[in-house]
Length: 612
Image (tube, rainbow, N blue to C red; front, side, top):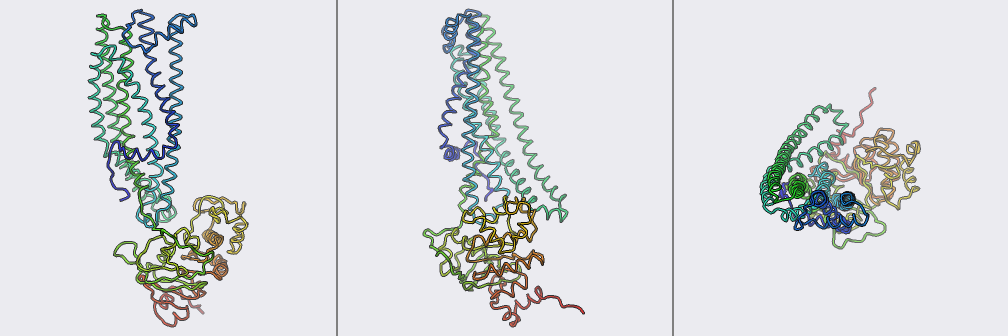
């Protein structure tokens, strides 16, 4: 449902009201921008008044109609001429130049203040969206592709920027519209009413354009989201793609999605082109009406020449807001759809349920972990763990083995509270996990996964992970204990070495040693190794086995492992099968039972016999 269809409303007022929450801190700047656009719009109207009514009718022809509203421009021109002792025509030129400069400065200042306010507001929205998505549980990302989530933070935010900037532009268009309409009615009401007949035609064209493009623009957003998702998946797994020689197949699939997006974009472009040509034609028809009607009125001395010229200049102000509104329809639909997608993500309340009054953990845990009649499934009706019960004593090292899909990693995810569970219990030092806030719990559990994630930054950054309590000395000490200091010190910049994306400038073994250093620096009471040595070469494994002995000494440890030596050094071995505890005991005890562990050991762990 994360990509469900939305309302498709051209103007969702509820969405705009919600958006004001992020724009409200910048309302002063918005207010200044509004004043500036009103000033610029007024100056835009005054310039053609000076050109037509002042210069042509008053100065050149000397037949200005006192009933025609010149907005005081004739008086101002006369005042300038008298003050500077210059000809009225030169005074009109100076006034026109001043209006032009004022219009340009006010318009530029309006755009700068508007854009800065919009950018700041959307910056805050993007931060809130990132913060919200970062706290969604693993179950959310099990169902929703990361590429589609990224579209919300990038493309959809950008669409809102275009919307808000466009609204500011439209305000600047409609102010001259009403001023120009008032002056035109005063000059010649009949001609003005004739021109106004064009507005319903243009309004109807805009309405049908909206209907024709509403569904189309939603399809554009969906295909663009699919493009982002597919590219993210392929770039993240680029090595697998290249190793399996899937470049052509993936390119073909990407081409299909891209062509679908292109088809929708082309259809919208054709509609926009047709709409633009139609509105331009209507504006030229209106200009022809003014020339025909006004020319006859001038000959019959019913209208001044300046008035006709003013009508020709005001046609653009009369019709351009309707044209601009039609041109903004594309942006408006895209932005409304993007806004709905953004707020859908912000409203997505799926989360780990935290206790209202979290239990307070002691300064140092003993490290006892107890699973009691735990049942769990990722999907309804599909049980992954079935009545799992066992206890790990403080400081004990427990190895967990079992066939693929038996629930080994699921136990770790539930212990770290990545998923909610309500059928059964997990206790940490006798405290129910559901009574512990996940943030407090994860500080006490150090997890090392086989697929160790490297963040952008230096080696020290990847050990400390932004924790101010982990000093450089502590990070170096942790690296020494897990035998990672040697390769780090050999690098050109040591702990200041900047790692490439996903740590590709380190070997797999070096990344795993770095993972151990990261966990040790945090000093958790419970250590979890989820197949952490599965991809390590023999030489590096010797270093890690030595580090493991230091790490697990006096620390409760849970190890999901395939290596025989790691299992043999564990205090006990837990065997999972089909989500149930099949066997539990020491390595020697389980071998002596000749049950499932014995069979797994024989198939997977038995070392080959030496040949003579």
